[in-house]
Length: 187
Image 1 (cartoon, one colour):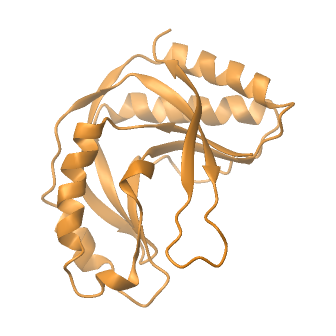
Image 2 (cartoon, one colour):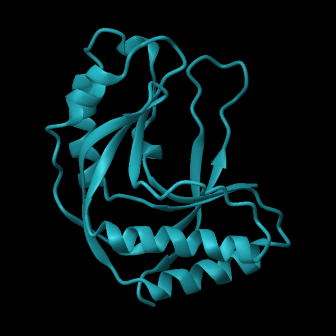
């Protein structure tokens, strides 16, 4: 199964961002983007790819230890940007140091049990709101997110999420995400 570690923002934070993102749908070129669906919004900490059932118990144990080592902390969704013209994202403000540490622990634990965790760049907390496979420039969309500042919320747990790929050949199909385990921060 395809798994990743994530932080799931609470519904009020997602609703605030959703209202802002809905306005971006009116910009020229918005219909060429693949907008991510609100029920799947998350902050990825580490992506593991395919994980076999025999490795899962050790991964769970490593993630439980990672969660125990990091304390709950305050963040908020705010601002936004783009990765070139491939992805549009909402940013994260607040205690990003703890969030980065949590991401590092989630990746390190998986590497220790032999999972290939590709983290060749520094962790950049973000929530992807759209992907682009066309010639549409994302700069106007990123500029549209610069004024966004959501309410502060407390990151209280680390989640292990399963990704179910979209049905092939179905236009507009989105991946579906399922939380398969979660651990409270700070034990």
